[in-house]
Image (cartoon, rainbow, N blue to C red; front, side, top):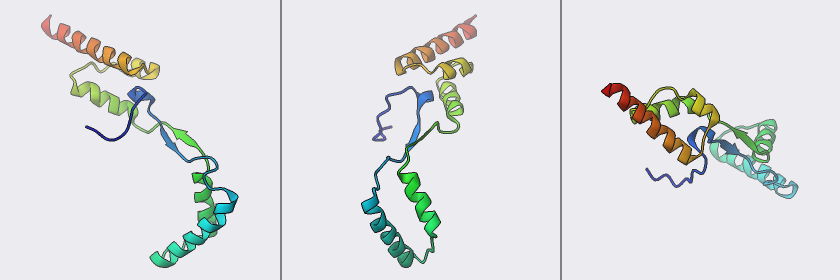
Length: 117
């Protein structure tokens, strides 16, 4: 399925990245806080100065984390292609996409061999 995203790391190495350091500089900060107040008035939302400052800090800070549940998603992928369920070692090593494809093919061959013997 085309999503518009380009994945250049193997699935277990995907990261969720938020924030851009310095995207809101000191000159724009006051204007953005003014716009927050206008938005609050238009939407009847009453954000506090602390909430707005916290949001500005989050936007200005690079945060990288691994999305939760990647291993379980990877296990589902293996299940969908009738692959093996022993992926914990592969997940922790996290190979390239070619390594991922080779691993999946090897697991499929193992499963076929187990079923034919």
